[in-house]
Structures are given as structure tokens and as C-alpha cells.
Image (cartoon, rainbow, N blue to C red; front, top):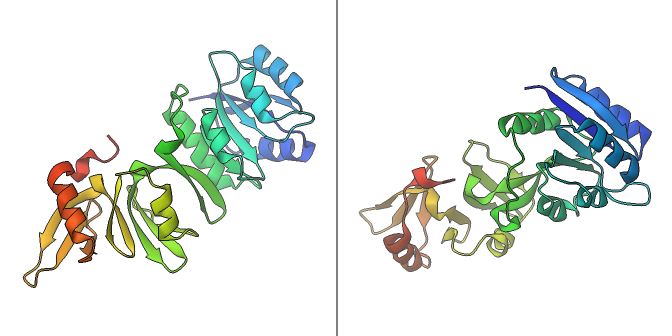
Length: 246
């Protein structure tokens, strides 16, 4: 799939760096560049690019001003910025991705793979469908349904994801409990949350203990304090692990 891109940034060095990064990807063409909203709109109207790499802080205006003046059909939009505090607003603008500067080649490659797998801009997801996470030098929106379980490791937590990755996140289990959509995650014990739809099996041991088996074949013991609620919820709401993400 060939893609025509528009790069919008108010720094010449940043424009050149993004152009260089994109040059490593066959089939990706830079159709235009702009350093402010007015010029960006002119290039967009003339070139109708498939994808826009958009900085947030522009000369006199912001990338959100550019998005607000677009007309359908919208291009796919990827925000590129040095600041993660705009992530939720970017997501509400139907951004496909959010790259933090300096952009890492492997992170850009991941974004382009996502673009190629979605030929049209998807309908705007609701912010509560995803959570914004920072993993090492990258940051991304992660669908809640991609998280099978969350395990506490001190002030950090480890996510166990559908794709097999297990990133370590600087966020406590208590913070995850406050962030998670109501009713989606069950607390199995004081150091683990489990997505309800990721539970494949519930086992009881001879000595009366209980264990949850998740879609990734991990066994998570259920604490006595949490067993009554786990039992009640699973009796009424249990869905097999194959339902995760559907």
C-alpha cells in the first residue's frame, strides 16, 4: 500500500528528521511539508495526503486548530510532539497514533504498520475504550481489551497483553484500579487485576484454594478476601477468553 504523507512542524530540523525517517520505508511518499496551520491547510487541500504527521505546538496556533478546520474525508492523523500531556485530547481528535519526540525508527515502523492495516480512518473511539501508557521510550494508546492481567511489582506494574508482551509500567495497582472501566477488571488478590473476559478457567484445589487461569495460560491465585466477589461475578457474567477483544 503506497502512502502519501504531509509533515507539519514549526521546526525545520524536525521536518528534515521526519522526512529522513520516512525515507527508509518503501511506498511512503512525502507529498508536502508545512510549518503553520494556514500553509498546512493549503497543502492538504491541494495534495489530499493519506496520512498527516502533525506537531501540536505550531507558530501562533496548534495542531488541534488544523484538525478543527479539516473537512471530510479526513486523512489519518498521527500527532508528533515532545509532550505527552496532550495525549487524551489527541485521541479525542480521532488520531491514529501519538509519537513522542525524538521519534524512534522502530516506533514509526509500528505506526506505519497500523496505518496499512486500516485503509480508512476508523470511527472515533471513546477515550474510555483505551488507556494511555508510556513504555520505555515509547507511548501509545492501549485498548483495555488487550490487557489480560495487571500484576503489581512494587511501585511498578507489569501488564500481560494479548500479543504476549509484558511491559513494566510506572503506575501502581491502585492507580490502575482507579483508571480501569467499571466492571471490566476483577481483583484476584492484593497484587493482581484480571480482565473478566480473559478468564479461561477457574480451578479449586484440594485444600480449598482457588486459582484463575487466564487466556495466556497463567495461573493467578485468588485471595480469600476477594473470592466471594470473584465467585459472584463469574457465576453471572463469565464469558470465555475467546471473547476478549470482540
